Image (cartoon, rainbow, N blue to C red; front, side, top):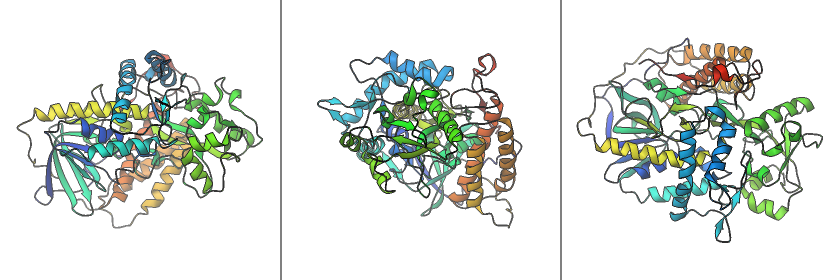
Length: 535
């Protein structure tokens, strides 16, 4: 990348800022971060910081559910096989085995804590989603699983005397000294900038869907954790692999609400503007093919019919069952005068889940000493080139426990480094010409959707690289004073890494579809792409 990224985004001096000390700092308040906090020894202090409220994360918006082997007729081997079939050879088989075998225990833990999963009699009601060979998706309140899971975990956090929560607090950068993470510099409106010193730090900041014009992600998903890890020197891996969810509500003026894959698991059909059920034209698995297959098929069918979307049709299903199973989706659609039991739902793909991210090992340890990570911010090896539906909440819980436990043990062993260090970053002269940050952000999201969306090619990716490099030259050279500027700087950093990786991988694999290299190249590209900044 032609434009270097500054090590720190803001000026600071330890004599001029507030200081805070904690044994373990956790950046991110979604499921992975909160579960990590609960895994830390109660004798140690934990600070969880989140840039919005605890309820505002990708975890809370998860509709489909949590995938795990819970039925008597299901087997770990089958879930592993489905995961490997979707993610391909870029999956780490050891990681896949471990996460899938541990997931049922994590779900039983949630039940013990009071999570109200949907049931059939005394058993959990299990749904099916694309590319799963069995019904193994535990869900809550029909299609509001994430909301219920987060409610449950927050209830446990509130009982933990060693855990402090700072909401509405932005993490600007990780603090590093002699190649080790020592905490982070944070900002909120009440205290301004604060230097938080931690024995161990865990990143759980989620994904980067806001880099795209069409996305299911909430406003907070701007890739901050990946950017701050990269600036600090941690390795990032497989950043070309963004998963596009096939079915996002597409209505002018509406936010891009997710229409859960569970609808297709319950029998919903995809049809085009003429009523043709087209998925069988592209894949024998039809609507239950993996997400990359369905997203690409929808894009092609939209082009074929010259229509901006396709339609999800549930009108042939029992109306009462549909409303009971998908109350949240029904409510969202009703706001736009759509009755999901009688009307076709207009849908098209949108950026949904970042499968690449900060490289971690099986314990959640990153390549930067003192830094751990869990959840969507990571590249753990579970998802490979294409995430299997509903494996993400399982990963968040399993790796949350692992990262929390590992950081806890490491922090307990440290006795001589719990103090402020003489780190500082000088103020620079920024140009006086004001920038329209919203315009740059909107332009970036449109560019990424156009050039690095469901399909990519060298020409479009090259155009994206040139534009992003130009924006980086005059945006990254400034020191902003609030999250609007820092978010844009993070988005430009992560977008450029995604473009670089997508240009490098001259093949089609999983969610990375290069129209100029339409076949997989196992001889050369059956491997990961990695980036790390020299610090």
